Length: 120
Image (tube, rainbow, N blue to C red; front, top):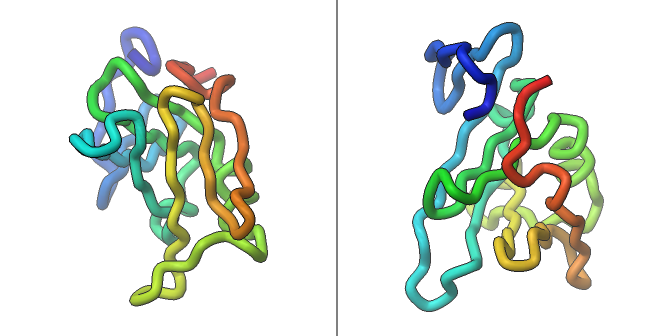
């Protein structure tokens, strides 16, 4: 789905290589209490890839984002920090609104241009 006829090749923890692109992949299962809400985190392993792939419940809803977008969330001074692991940032995806909320005060960004995106 991401790169037509190019098969993914495992490339480490939660990563695959498709062509020359390295993807960090995250899947979040549906929450019966909040069907369109998904929790993800950004960690140092995430930041070592070229792209981040968030799969929300099934392959029908996914966001393929360049690492520059993910890095900007990670670097935001208000981004939510995991209490047990200060190097991890926590984000919340609203798959109905196609947005990610990630910082104090409800700072969010649109994910619409990354919905069902493919590799260049």
